[in-house]
Image 1 (spheres, rainbow, N blue to C red):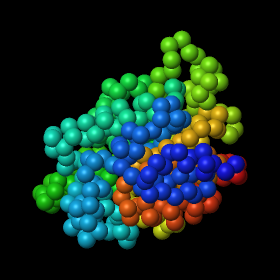
Image 2 (image 1 turned 135 degrees about the horizontal axis):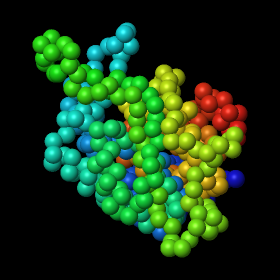
Image 3 (image 1 turned 30 degrees about the horizontal axis):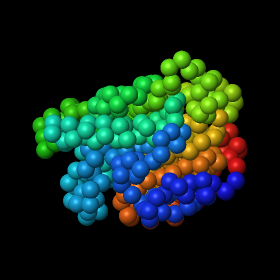
Image 4 (image 1 turned 180 degrees about the horizontal axis):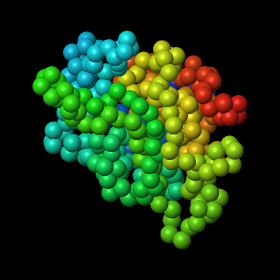
Length: 314
């Protein structure tokens, strides 16, 4: 089914493009969310910027030039060049409060746009999740647990900066071996059961896995494969094998519209395309928006390590 006419009303007057079943919008997500009609969206799957400032133009320029700024430019490791990572621990108290306000404002704008019973999957990290999750809950969302992405990254485990030789047996934080994704649900109307919500809004629950078993909250995940990084050069790119599982579960009946308000290079939208869902991606950085136009069709066509899900793709 051609979903472009259905999605055309969501692009407003912003620069945009249509790719498959998806609409891509070059806009600030807070402005875009403020214009959405009520109860028009069925799920959110997103990996937002943390610190909020790491994707500001000046910080992106520093990362590109190798100067760091908010971004930690790590050395090569075992012959492999490590990607820059934002310095979450470098945020001072004022910046942490600014981040809390940002996510509170974001959740306040998302809330009316979602159908009752709609779910949000939101990527986080162990250091900041408690702050961000509480800001979202305070705007009326139900906390429904977390998806733990088991993945060993290069984050954490560093010796004290500029004192590595003095304290060789000390690390300032644990080496990260997991990534928490918060799960939130917009409350259903009083007295409404999940079955009623499914009938009325097509929301309220999560889609079971293809083998009939429940969606699970611990998912073993590889680091993003190089072939995907070659297609989409984004510093926080998540693997298709993982994203497709989240996206697939987010629409319990396989119907509705998923949004990614922080689209980046489009990996979540590509996952939605791969499983045959209709989606909308919002990205304010012009370069990443342009990249998404090329990356989404290529990422969505990749076969992943999840053989069962790959075989079921449209």
